[in-house]
Image (cartoon, rainbow, N blue to C red; front, side, top):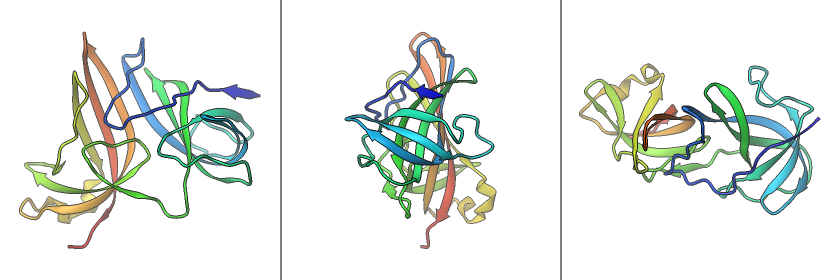
Length: 200
């Protein structure tokens, strides 16, 4: 069965897009193996070859039309390749696929510049403040948004708990959650995973 997803042509990492009629919006990515069948100006048709068994968003044998995000090189028709599909859920229910990009053999690590996007990896300075890990340079929130970052499994990196020693890490953005709090008021929460603590 051919499933057609709505397209999102441009995504800016420092802007937290909200969905209409959605109290809690979550943006995540699913990594798949897929065949690119057709390529248009801003979208591709992809046949899913394999997908994670514990992820119900995408399944092997499905075909989707998905937008290409502006960080991605334009995909070409050809053999199966590793792809990353970004999607959103609204109030716990899947809403739509957003964008797709190819994952090369080596994951690109970007320099953090006060904005982040789901699925991307960044190199950033961090410091331990009171009882939590913080980015040395805080994220710039969109207008009317409170914003926070939660680091998963910090206990695996005990060296980060030394408040006197700033460290540089590589982290991957796992999800973005946007909660509508009231009239023109939102909270944006990012969950990230530490990939590496870089040597001093």
